[in-house]
Image (cartoon, rainbow, N blue to C red; front, side, top):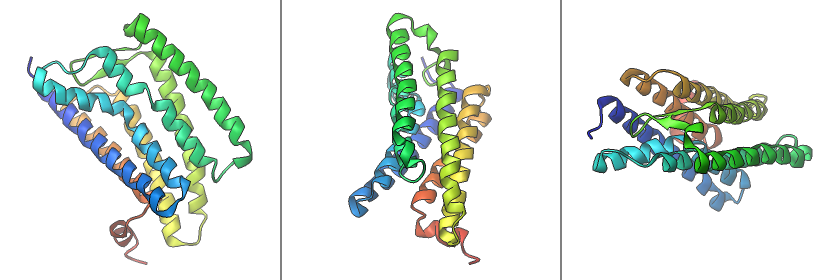
Length: 241
């Protein structure tokens, strides 16, 4: 079985997004070892695991180049969903470093309950009836059922709402660089949420896949700039200062 053009475009752009996300995540995470500030460890790990839903399509694409069929459906579901609650935990730990620190235990405990319910239902369906989770459309595309989609929307809302609150701290600063970081984070949250929702709801064509994945890639770059603001980005975006 040969890959269709749609599958190839989907697989290639999933792979590009995942590669960029992993690179950015590990770059941010590595700053922890240099500065010994836990925030870098947390936000780096957050972005690594938040890209997880696109891991299986990337891996399945690479394997399909060899065997023509990709990875088994159950493995696809497992790789794409297992660590999503962990990504939110990392983010909430980072968020409560700066905001609502006194309510950290309540915030984390509440999410741990939600995440645990998700994991229990996910593994129950995975072993009993995988069709309750979703269905694969070829080697690199999946349609998730309402069970997964409800939780993914909840997780996305948690990240976006807390993310806006977090970025607002930087927007209040008088320092142009700090304010720019806040703006980049706002863009990151908006583009990631838009890209993720479109990826899950819009009928795929070669054009829509490219546009959606470019939006997601932009979100990864803005996340990178929002926390590290490399010199090239600072020079490009603050050149008038």
